[in-house]
Length: 536
Image (cartoon, rainbow, N blue to C red):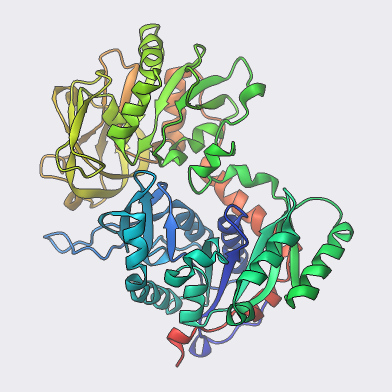
């Protein structure tokens, strides 16, 4: 364990983890290091200047103006940084991920700055304004450094991409602006670590090369002695020391992936269901282009009695599905149109007609109604589209984004439920008179609700008269063990068999324990430095 200083002599150290490319495990390793150093008693905070993901979490703070009664508004950050905050034992803050980009199409993203949605920007427009956002990034980093002993920074994608370097604020651009040391992280599960490290070295400038204090090899499997010549070659050509080989972490699948790229690469829940047991509850999920917050399904995927299949475009929904689930979407009208183009609505109608369950979460819930209108073009071009027609309600996209963190009791199931809302649409209609949930004790969040919603108990979502079609706006609903067990008993006659919260905590502890074995944490601590922006 590193030697502690008295609080009066503490100055925050900062260390950045940059990647040789995307998907080398930066988010996971930062989470593990956060937990490892926190277990030593340090105050640790995660930081990622810019994240691109439609998986987001609600924070305790925001840069938006307070509610009329003076209570603060909630913000949002990438789900990966929320997990890293959990690893630190700290509440999630907008300063941990000051810039969040939420893709709405191949070239347009919603820009969220310190928890507040600023609007939708094209990739070119965002690139042109990135340097203007650097002061906000540095302010957020300084705030975190002011409350921590160690800030662990996760870079974005590949830190050596020169075509992005001019306006970079998340890799070397940030490192040079704040005078930060960095470690280069690569992975060897697919080979190519040597080429990736040496390629990065060639692309970095001399000043950038000097900021790299060493390299780490993630997802290593095999005999370290066989890899030794490769590590020696990297050091010989770059001068960067080998800081360690991180063995393949088998429990990584217990933690939700950062974004939908994992689904495309077959890393999401239920991928590879050839081994699905016939007695498992089969949940089928159409793979929509702008899926958001798909980690809502992670607690279900963790259940031994549940199998989840993500169905790719061009493939009909399986007839043996017990449940069809429509998760959230960052472009609901566009995704619903894509669902129609795939013919999946025919499969869904047949599924419901034969007695199957249909569940919609957030954007998926909006799809269950009669129409979805976007008169101001917030999620694309203005217009409307017919919904699937199972709930007698309409949805209009508009107004301020609704960000609510909820801890309540559902009177219909008599279960405690925690979760959050994150959406811009408002649904209305007689179908909402048959709610999916009936919530009370909203723990002081009445200021977040409209007057009629602030009453207790508060109806949430809706269900069909038969109870076989249901949905609502509440994300994270299946994280609540009691409710998940109640729901599984209702739809499948089988209660939950896991404690999901304990599963996450034990996985983070196991990851930290492995990193403590694989790496010299004291050496990493010594590499961390006080950034120039908070020097005294």
